[in-house]
Image 1 (cartoon, one colour):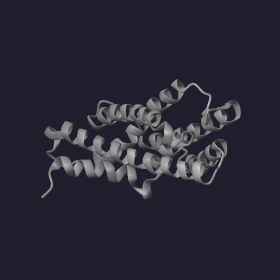
Image 2 (tube, one colour):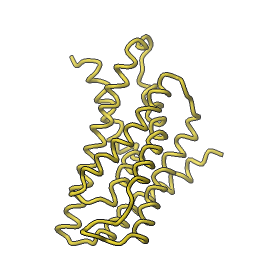
Image 3 (tube, one colour):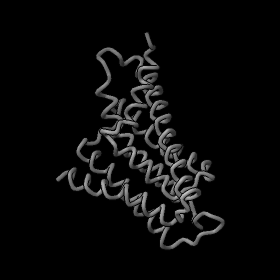
Length: 202
């Protein structure tokens, strides 16, 4: 019989990797669109910034310190995807390639990941609260930790897949990095725009 910690860690992993709830996956895809596999350290820092953001609001929302209407959270999540993809295309237009990568300042990218992580954390919290059973409040912190670890493992799995695909696309199929960026960003932006229209909260 598996432990409570393992159960919530698996729930976190399954939630981020759930193809039926693909909005979080699309955000990770958009985050990775401008990177080569050789830049995996930069992507790791980016995902860590996102994790810090969503861990904070997941904890605050799960502890009922903050509560944001679910309709707004569900609308803002695809907004973060669309804005990330749009930011990628602005880099495409303004950047100059230098030694195989874009010439760009990445601090803004990290800030976006942190801020957008705050929004995604509220989305995670809705799912997390629905998984809580009555009388489990005493072990809430342990459950939050396990759930966050599961989410992080799921995110890193998605990042690894995207970077491997980027390697195949750019190094084996010789797709220019700018074209790859536009393709992946567009692939994320299209569904995000549809979700924004479907989830308009007014």
